[in-house]
Amino acid sequence: MVKSVRVIGVGGSLRAGSTSRSALRAALDGALGAGAEPDLIGVRELDLPMYTPERSVPAAARRLAEAAYACDALIWSTPTYHGSVSGWFKNALDWLILLAERDPPYLTNKPVGLVATAGGIQGLQAVSSLDFIARALRAWSVPLVLPVAQASQSFDPEGRLTDELVGTQLRELGAEVVRAARQFQSEGSCDYADARQFADPGHRWPGAA
Ligand SMILES: Cc1cc2nc3c(=O)[nH]c(=O)nc-3n(C[C@H](O)[C@H](O)[C@H](O)COP(=O)(O)O)c2cc1C
Image (cartoon, rainbow, N blue to C red; front, side, top):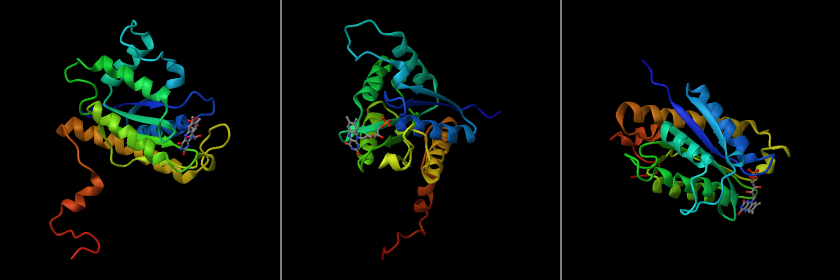
């Protein structure tokens, strides 16, 4: 029997027409197309207070942490703010400290797809920040990442995705996350499909002697 793959998408911004949220939706559509059960958790709706260890844990933080722990894979999508992730998005992930004492802790062995939208050209910096966070939380970032630069060219003013190529890339990322999750389910680890050819002893990098 094929096990279901539960993918949660976390992200977006506080703006009504959030491009990072639309990008997340498209990536989750790709996950759905690959046979997963996707669920979108927008940071705007979560409305979490800033993390502090002294306060009682808000219900929304517990809901986020439990969803993250129960799922098989995640997709994160943040706006690029000053060369990194937004504070609101990072704060949501900081609440995952609720998973620190679990066995296994945090997001152990869960693949994460990384997406960022950017007004300029710095989306890759935000994706790299996401990668650091993924590793800190014991997750595996999927090598295929998607920084959407100059987002106003790919989304309309209401935040709707208008760029078919970007839409296709986001859906491919979602499908890749599902593939990685299935591999973790069956083998307990995962590789990178596109890198398999490089494991072939007969393969030579272009230009290599
Ligand atoms: C506080 C702030 C900082 C930003 N910093 C950057 C940046 O460093 N590089 C960049 O390319 N875009 C930057 N932008 C533009 C946003 O990344 C861009 O508008 C993004 O699409 C917003 O995502 P959203 O539509 O989900 O709100 C910044 C926007 C704001 C509001």
